[in-house]
Image 1 (cartoon, rainbow, N blue to C red):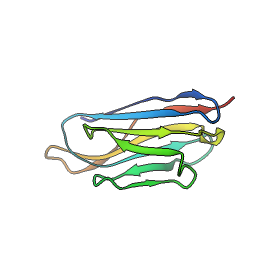
Image 2: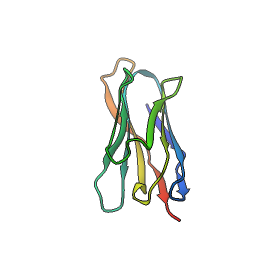
Image 3: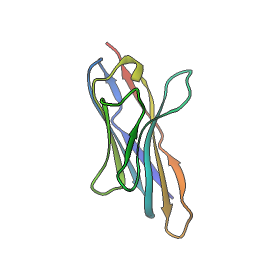
Image 4: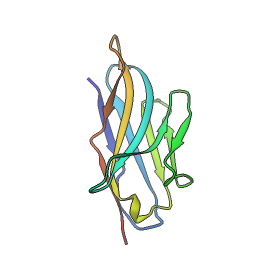
Length: 120
């Protein structure tokens, strides 16, 4: 089985920074897409940033220039560096990973979510 473990959320003042981490473990054969989503109270879950196996990245317009997605050296870890945080960034952030296990077709997995609160 696959386990995604997220960490790094918390309370930060406006203008501050946080770094989220998501580590995938299990009998993983290959990792494809690694994304970060977020969901604020009363709103739909939205894509924040994504990275492909080839290294391409994409960002929501609302976070461009402030957030950076990257993969760890082991390639089973994805990070989201969040700078210049705003109150509207407050949400539960979810890691999303598309991967294949040995001998199994690719599918997507979700992390448990980590709360990010931006408030003075």
